[in-house]
Amino acid sequence: MIKQDLLNELKRIICDNTLIVCIGSPLRSDDRAGLILCDKLIEKNVRKIVCEYGLENCIHDIVNVDPRILLVVDAVYSRKLNPGDIVLVEFNEFNLEGIEFTSTHSIPLEVVIEIIKK
Image (cartoon, rainbow, N blue to C red):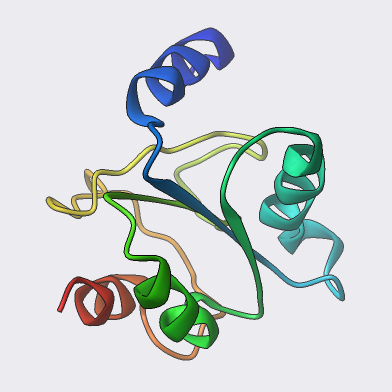
């Protein structure tokens, strides 16, 4: 996704009841993308949760906020993507359009999203 297209889409998505969840590991340099974004958002008036080591570790915090929109930021590895590529996925569809990626999370992301929805 082109940077300007991403910014336009994020402006469309983000509202007053949006929660941004930034996932990553400070121990892995290539898995810090979400954490770096949350650091950059400190000055902005945005609700966010820093969720180190997996979305499954923040389910309770997310459910307590009860956001209308949940924006999850995480680094992924895929043979079909180039380093730095950005993928925006609507979780109500959870269709990665054939993009296979490797996850280091103990519970698959789509399973955690379903738990949060309930």
